[in-house]
Amino acid sequence: MTTSKVYIETFWQIHRMIEEAGLQPGDRLPSERELADRLRVGRSSVREALRALELLGLIETRRGEGTFMKPFGDHQLIQLLGSFILQGNREKRDLIETKLLMERMCLQLACKRMTDEKLERIAQADRMYHSFFRRIVEATDNYLLLRIWLVLSDFFEHVYTVELPSECYEQMWKALQKRSCEEATAVYEQYVMQKMSKEN
Image 1 (cartoon, one colour):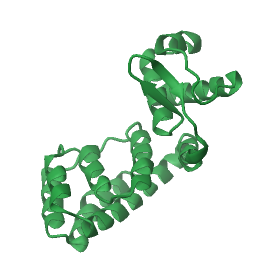
Image 2: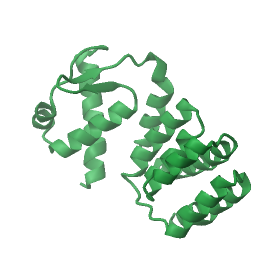
Image 3: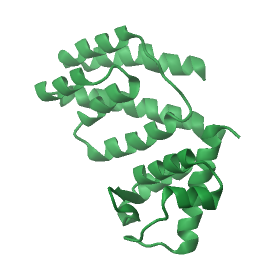
Image 4: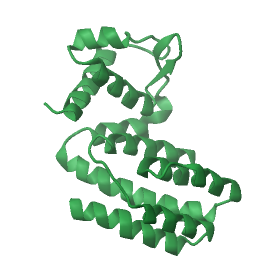
């Protein structure tokens, strides 16, 4: 079984355990070590599964205290999204398509709302796909978009590794400086969307 499959199975095992135990908001989850022993998987798989649950808004980690259930009534969309992503191969294709469309939309929105301060944060970001585009999504000033994008990206990184040439980031940066939605979108389509469509 591949690492990603172990992580996904662990996710669902912990999810079932939470439901069967009837854990409520504020209840403490077993430690990483206890979960690994109980589920008979490595601690790294447990750690990744817990991170996914945290991104979905179901749990929270308090430093020095442990991991606790969170109120999740306001996060049904995030839960449904995460559950859908974890289903199978067809959903992986849909994941890629949804993520690309969302990033393209966020890029256009960020251009319209770009400030010098946001440009500076983007300039300081690592020239890595996730880090760079996180700054762009943050520049939309839309917290829900950011939450959904973070969930998509987390699962995306378990399926694909995207490496973009330095000229992609440089051209994107110049387009953002000019607040040019058209140029920024063209760069994204050329380097990201075409790359992913060829690989899939």
